[in-house]
Structure formats: structure tokens, C-alpha cells
Length: 226
Ligand code: TIU
Image (cartoon, rainbow, N blue to C red; front, side):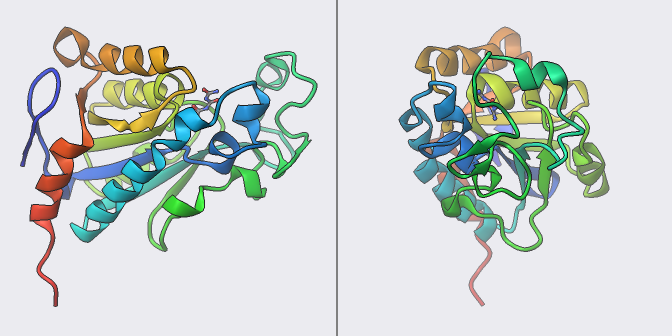
């Protein structure tokens, strides 16, 4: 199906595509998490919850592959680079106790995905120690094993983990379609520029569309009820 997008239409083949939802974690989206601890306004991200829920529902109904990611670290912090631990000079950092458990540590409540977008059984969840979803994870192998070459990318934050993942994916040969209103940043200007950078120069990293361009097409794909 053809999806209206920038810089030009995207040809989506649901059999070769995965919906990749980046880091919709309580630590980034809820009060008291890592994002807010860094001094950020979480309401800038919370506006993406409802569009993501609508897209996830339609994508599941169309029978598409869904993959979720979470940024975080082993409880022993062996995979936490010392540079990442001290960056920001905050008094509370990754691995320290926070209001939702240890900050960005796997298995802690704050590290988990928000209830509105919670993964279903059978949907792979990629735990990643970095900003990009390909670094030090098995995402590339999972996608190759399923014959996936197209990624519809959403999540937070636009200029950090979404952009890093799209750049990593692009270098590995994937065609990325980023859904603008399903992505968010603590900084509206970075969100806007992060999206423009992806579609610039003829789609240097990929394509950018909007939910209202994608959703009607997906709904038409919905398998007949049995
Ligand atoms: N997921 C993600 O973007 N991680 C970040 O740390 N983002 C910030 O904007 N801080």
C-alpha cells in the first residue's frame, strides 16, 4: 500500500514490515522517572500515547509484526558505560534508587513499558543499553529471521533514541517510515528538526508520515472477522 509521506510516498508491504515502538517506558513518560529527573517536561511525551495506542491497535488487527524496545541496564550495571553513568553530573543517576525503582534498570517498574502500550505475548521486547536499538542487541537477527526489511518507527525521544535507531537501521539496509505524531521529544524544536533531518535530501535516513495518512490504509487491511 502507498502511504503519503515526505519526501515522497512510501510503499508499505505489511508482510515485510515491523512496527518498532521505541522506549515508551515509565521512566521516560511518567512523573518521577529518569526523564523528569533530568529536568524534562514529561507532558511533551505523553501526547504520543494515544496516537501510539491507535496505531498499535490497527497494526495488530492487520496482523503486522510488533517489536518494542526498552532502554536500560543489567541490575549489576556491568553493561553501563562509566561515561553514561556520570554524564549530566546529576546527584541521582542510572542504577540509583528512584520513585519507580532503580533508574533504568531492567526488571524495575520504571524501566517497563507504560500500561497503555504494553506488549502482548509473542511481541519481541528488545532490551538495549544504548540509544540505538541495534547496538548490543539481537534486533537485526530477529528482523532478518522474519524477512523484515521495512520499519515503521514510533516512540521517544524523536532526536535521541528514535533518530539513533533510524540511522542504525538505515545503514543496515532497512527502509524506515517514521510516524511524526507518534514520536515525541521533551524539546518541540528538536522533535521538528529530528523529523526534518530524516526526510531531508531525498530521504537521507528514511520517510516521515502522519498517523492520519497511515491509519486509514491499515484499517482497510484488517482481516475479515471470523
Ligand atoms: N529513549 C531515549 O530517547 N532516551 C533518552 O535518554 N532520551 C532523552 O531524550 N534523554
